Length: 79
Image 1 (cartoon, rainbow, N blue to C red):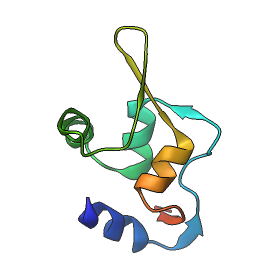
Image 2 (tube, rainbow, N blue to C red; image 1 turned 180 degrees about the vertical axis):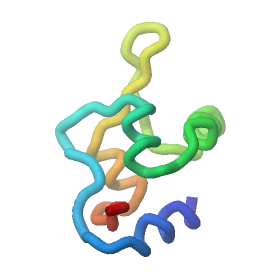
Image 3 (cartoon, rainbow, N blue to C red; image 1 turned 90 degrees about the horizontal axis):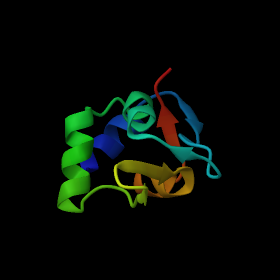
Image 4 (cartoon, helix red, strand yellow; image 1 turned 45 degrees about the horizontal axis):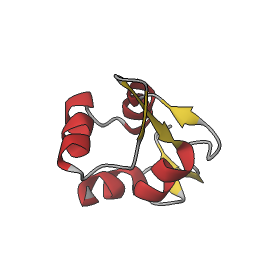
């Protein structure tokens, strides 16, 4: 995960990657961070990824605040 943080930090604009108050689907997270879906799922299975909540039997969501903390509170976004 260190290489991901460094990659995100090497871009131009400082701001939060995610809205702290919103719940995000996996698809939204991987699109925003440019991390592959398979890598993100592997992190979850191995307990290495950000904390998540399970809604129902198959639905997984991530809190924006948790994602910002995981990826480094204030990060640089891809522009």
